[in-house]
Length: 236
Image (cartoon, rainbow, N blue to C red):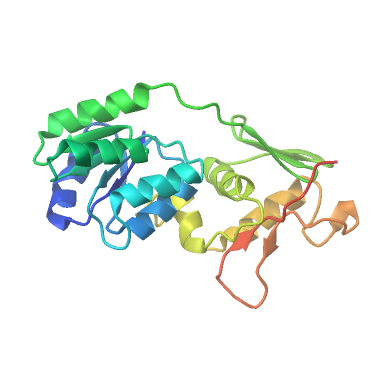
């Protein structure tokens, strides 16, 4: 299970990260509300733990923004504020649970496990872009020329793009989607990888077998390293 910890207290993060990892949670860490929201929106976390008081965007505002964007990741909010009104505001904003500081790490882990046990919303495992279909459960990409098998990293990379067609995905966001916050396993070009797989499934991004009518993957021209995106296409 993978957790996003959004907390600007560096000392607390230093303590919590190994505690979470020992309990079996992979852990990405962000120190600001704005960066934390971006990570939350672009990565398939099982749960998020966030401080109420954050630089850039406070925890309540962050949760509201995530819920408005239909992000259903369970959220456990931490706070040093002890008033009932503060807890109610956080829960009404969309947090799933609340834990007051200081807290026992054992209770934090127990609450996270409870959140992760809750039935999740059904997530579509077959994603389409034009005549390409990604099956995230089977780790496969199917197109006019047939089906190709994907590695888990390739699958995660394509899934991140296909779930947000038309949206620019920066290289940093794509790295987070595949390898997490500390990932160093890739030194190449992520959009080049999607081009290769799209071509293998039956069509090169410049046309290939489909006669150039569609471009499943499009790198932003003139901005080397800016990232990549998929155009919004209908099937057929």
